[in-house]
Image 1 (cartoon, one colour):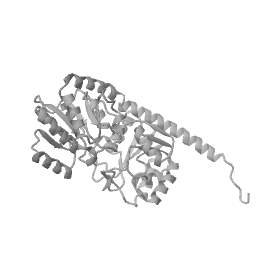
Image 2 (cartoon, rainbow, N blue to C red; image 1 turned 45 degrees about the vertical axis):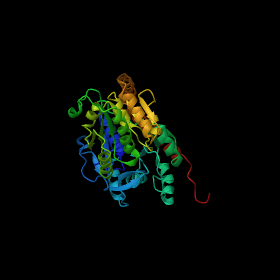
Image 3 (cartoon, rainbow, N blue to C red; image 1 turned 180 degrees about the vertical axis):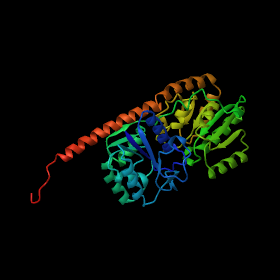
Image 4 (cartoon, rainbow, N blue to C red; image 1 turned 120 degrees about the vertical axis):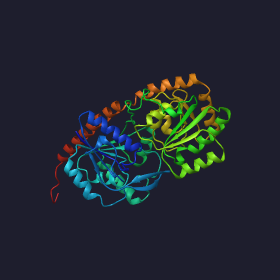
Length: 393
C-alpha cells in the first residue's frame, strides 16, 4: 500500500501526534508499505528516518488551544500544494491525524480522491475542532462523509469525538516502541548517587499540573531528605515561574533539565525510581505513563479519564484526585518508603506496556485500512449500480 500520514502539527517540534506518526511510519516501512508524511514545518525536520519521504505543506503558527499551544498552519492557500501532492503520489490510503484540525488536514480531506481514515487523539476543547465558528462546524459535518474509517486512541477520545463527529469508530490505542523504551538502557550517570528520583516529563503547561507536583514534593522533601525531583520538558514562561517558586520556598534538589531528545529520553526514565504525572485533565491517553512503565517504573498520576485507561490504581501505580497536593504527597511518600511496592508495581507495568507494542498496534491499523478499503469499494459499487435519473422522470 502507498500510505499518506498527515499531521496538522509542526513536524519540527515533536509532540504526541508527531511521535505517533513517526512510530507508524517506522512500522509501516518495516512491513513493506510505501509511506509519505505530509505536514507543516517551521524548519526542516531532523528525523533521518523520513529523509526523502517528507512533504512539507504550509508554515505553522503558535495558536492557544485547549490549555495548550498548538503549532498549526492557518493559511487558506494550501489547495494548490495539496492537490499537487495527491496527484503526484496517488495514495491508496490517506490517514489524517485530527482530520478536522484546520487547515491542512481538513483541506486534504476535502481534496483527497482516495480512501480516507481519521485518527482522533483529543479530549476536550471546542467542536469543529476547537473552533466555534458555525460555518466551520457545518463544513466539518459535511466533510465527515469523506471519512471511510474513524479511529479513536482511547475510550475517552472516542466519547469526545463521537459527540461532534458521528461515525462507526474503532478504538486503537497509541503504541510504544519497546525497542527504544526498555529496561536495558543506561541511566543518566549524574543522578546515580543513591537518592530516590521522582521524574516528571512533559511540556510546562498549566494543565500538566507541575505546580501541584512541586508543592507536593516540598511536603515530601521535608520528611524524606533523600529524594530528588527531575523535571524534563520544554517551556520558558512557566519554567521561570516554577524556578522562582522553588527559590523563594527554598525547596532543595529540583533539577530542571529542559527539553531532551527522543534518543535521550529513555535514559531519564531509567534514572527514575518513581514516575509522576499530575495532569489536571484533557489527556486522552497516557503515553508518558506507558513509556515509564516500559522501563519498569511505578506510577503516581492523576485520576483522570485518559490515565485511568492505561493505569489501574493499585496495580501499576497509584492514582490521586487532580489538584490534590496532600493526596499527591501521600502517594509519593508511600512509594518512596516502600521499595518492594515500587518493584511490584514496576513489574506489573512491564506486562501492561507490552500490550501496547507498536508492532501490534501497527498491525491493527493495517487491518483497519483493509476494512476501510473494502467498505469504500462496496459503497462505490453500490453507488455506480443505482439507476441514472433521466431528464423528465
